[in-house]
Image 1 (cartoon, helix red, strand yellow):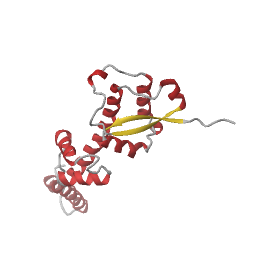
Image 2: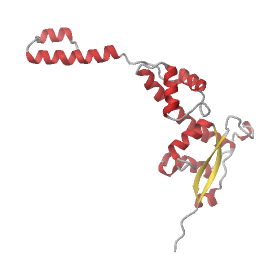
Image 3: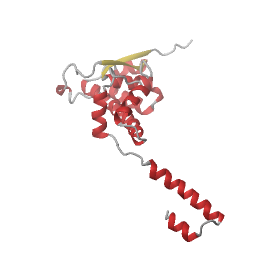
Image 4: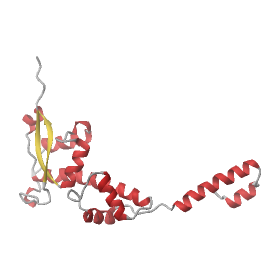
Length: 189
């Protein structure tokens, strides 16, 4: 009878919102097997430890207040170990921090583009994606969005009315109510 392979975990300190992002995307404990790119990234950190910047980082990174548990196979556990260097911990955190920020900037940018004020967009994002104030502070989100987010609003009046007018003019032209010349005059598009 064949045994099922045992699973082991690697403990990695991360920022609270990175922890929440990872839980939402990969469950708890974190299981990267459904995401080949993230799985390969993590396995490469285990296989080829990088300690080139370890001296630049303190033993405890104070912003990394949460710890995630990442599943690894028994094979990886015995072959590559279960620890990451400080350099690799920071690389791990940066990768998923950037992904969380891209999610945040995209969603807030869409809400803002649809006409909501930024403060409502941030609250909507925090509520919808379960990044409460303890996990990802309003002020931190606001600061990052104003620095890096896309803040263009859609001009619904011009966009929608122009499209509706174009439809009406095309219908009127096809019915013979207006001439081709009048259609061109009113609808240059």
